[in-house]
Image (cartoon, rainbow, N blue to C red):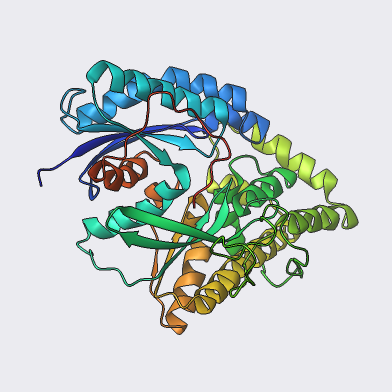
Length: 389
């Protein structure tokens, strides 16, 4: 079969991205325009601003991706775009542009689930390394600012199928990182900042209790088992997450230990530095703050790793994927590699550039759909709460 070059477009949150991927296994170009500077003053993503920034960036980003790949609009074989989940306005920018290109160029249009894209980021890079043989079943943890999901992934002749066996009941892990960083006056994005500061603190200084999930998930349909069949008992447990409690525990610790004034001093000091460096964050954190940061990160990592490996044992999986923005966290990677090795389970991560939102993963996830001629109708729209199942 001749090579297929797919143009991927991603605009689900605060990165405008475009990429060219050859036959689902070689990144030819990968361009990302970040909006961190736009959202930093607000301590998080502002949806309206995100949509406006996507409108400004989408055309030059796509043109750059084509130029770096030595391709043109006419030479690509298909156009893939993120349909959801994500911010509705941000998604619509990418979808509208992808539709216009597909219509004008008479090219196939492929709608991609953002979560599936994160899973295919791992597959893409393993294929680039020449590793085409994966041991099944595969369990994928997708963990980012908006998502904390566990999926059983399987490959068949028509593509990939996914079964959700766990998700967060409230805050996603990456959301908890960002909110705690904002609470402590560290700015946005919080995850990378906490990851850099945590090694300087004592992870055992503050004891955080693990989340206790006792009630049934209201989002699950009553009377269905993990395969969606009615009237049957669930023969496997779910492995859900909850991170709103630890966020509240950090807030309570700050209040009890009267840390508000030092936090405000830190926030103002960091705002006055135009180009922040790692040493700027460290120089404005006292021992108590560093210990709190280290303890918080350790609690999140232990919960993610513990529940994921427990799910892997329960479902007797052979391979583990860890992907999404939080997969770039250094302590999370080291802990998964250590604990996975102890259980004899290979753990695969995407590279750090492909852990965060990007369009190469969207183009890679589109390739099986391209082979199956699973093309989107021109009237499809954004789905902010799109599920992967």
